[in-house]
Image (cartoon, rainbow, N blue to C red; front, top):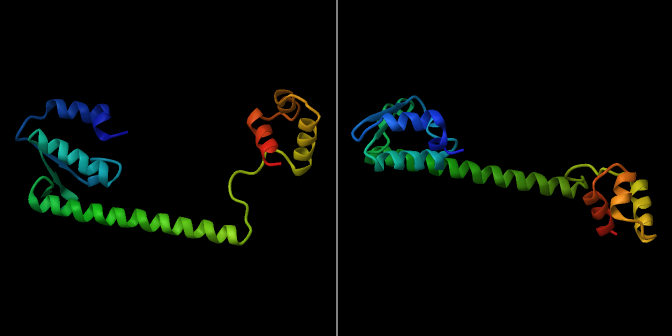
Length: 147
């Protein structure tokens, strides 16, 4: 949820006027991520409210120096996200190469899957099979489709 949709923040904005200064202790008070923080600061600047962050030495985030600081923080945040994605993909590839099965375990054992396939081949209804095995129709159809 964007910070501007929070009831408390909206109430604060209703009381603020052009020329006011919003002082926050840390950037995370302005949003959940760097993009959300940037959007919030830009929106406040549009209505004439300056934003100062104490954790950054009280810098005015709507000033030139503040915008540069925000750009550096955004670049670092994007770099961290990219590294996280790379590490995740690398870990998934390694796990697959080691033969690990990814994802949620099957709701049906191998024997049950064979029974399901046999029942489908004999023309039994998907819904009836799902009820018998106490699972969803989607699970039964997944077994059917992986034949």
